[in-house]
Amino acid sequence: MRCPWNGRTCQKTKTPIAGKDFKTGQTLMKTVIAPGLKARAIGIEGWFSTNILGNRDGEVLDDPDNFKTKEISKLGVLEELLEPDLYPDLYGNLYHKVRINYYPPRGDNKEGWDNIDIRGWLNYPMQIKVDFLCRDSILAAPLVLDLAIFLDLAKRAGLSGIQEWLSFYLKSPQAPKGVHPMHDIFKQLNKLENTIRHLAGEDLITNLGLDYE
Image 1: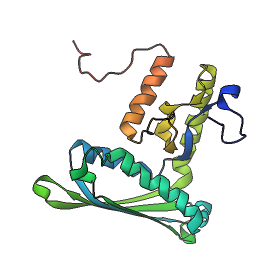
Image 2 (image 1 turned 90 degrees about the vertical axis):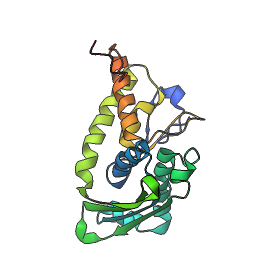
Image 3 (image 1 turned 90 degrees about the horizontal axis):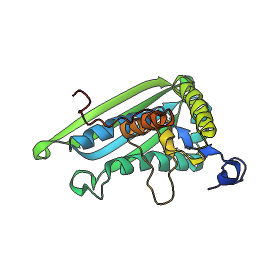
């Protein structure tokens, strides 16, 4: 596994890495909502997402070639979360569309708007509308601080290479060869908390419900 910023191997430098692209706006909402729908076996027919942003990120992504990379990462999240191969009746025909619109007056403020067409019991059609009005830097800054602290912790603990437990923060988390990246934010949080507890020598969280005996 090669370190992306300088080409040296992570084994040689003992450098911990995690992934790229902070999970802040619309993708954050997807990794919160989709696991809940899946847990209740609610089918999804379509998921339409559009973004309005006016900062440098929006200007760069206004270029179709630049947007393509972002589109791939955004589209891949739902497929990994919903596992349509395992649940074809619920998610096998999901139509997923993502759009990004550069609108300078918004500046650092951005808006992620989602329309989700779902099916309940007896295939009854329903809809969910999400309008997430947020600020890019405010959402991203705490992630930068957390990652700096945890990557330093990993380095001091002798951990190197891919750190799956930091997937919680990233839109495109890395995973070892042959392992699919995890996108479910609740599973990511559980892995993050348990890894920190393990490094601290504490008991892991099992969620068995037997801790009250």
